[in-house]
Length: 313
Image (cartoon, rainbow, N blue to C red):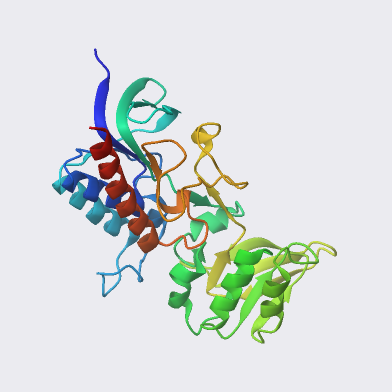
């Protein structure tokens, strides 16, 4: 059987991937999308999305991704179950790129849009998984508003944790920041902001033992890792800010990445260092990490893919 050849293949199915699919399909590129291990991406772990334009009453993360999927399919996107497990990118402009799906099926495309996203790193506690979306979050900017006027706990010692703690401090009467070591890894400027914010309490050398509650988080049991002393902190929200890992393992040695594994794109556009290969969403954005910015770069990638194809045909 001859190998399938297509104009555009999209890897990943979050806001970036679906938006790329909508634009690529409307440009008559007849895109093929492989949804990956987590169809819909990180938003499917969020019970309510309140900051995406067009949903005045908010929307469930899964429902929103289903809306985007239907819209992409309405314009002709072929959404397929499957995981891209290997890539062979041609460095010559105009030549086909080859992808391996589920370790066995090979498929080719003139353009590839990578929208595999990033995965938030969690502590790995059973109670953390139990309350995912019901008090547990990895994004203060996304979910902080739901905890306005409530006490919250945030875990982490880097710049992200410091930034999210100060963001939450504007909404919440008390923010407890748990730092595993006796010092923060955050920049001096960010540490200064945290230390000068009166309603942020830092607990040094402190680790999370368990999240407590019935249907949602009500308190956090913590332990001092120097003396073993445990205590319970009342909190309705538990924010994990210990980093994100971009889903780029299969692109190692194939595309240029930064030191933390995010794909590098040319300034102001989404093209990678390989002609015809584009990266959109959280796989190349470690600054904003929002659904709306991911969707924006998905649009950019599709428009750039269409222009690329026009230039080689």
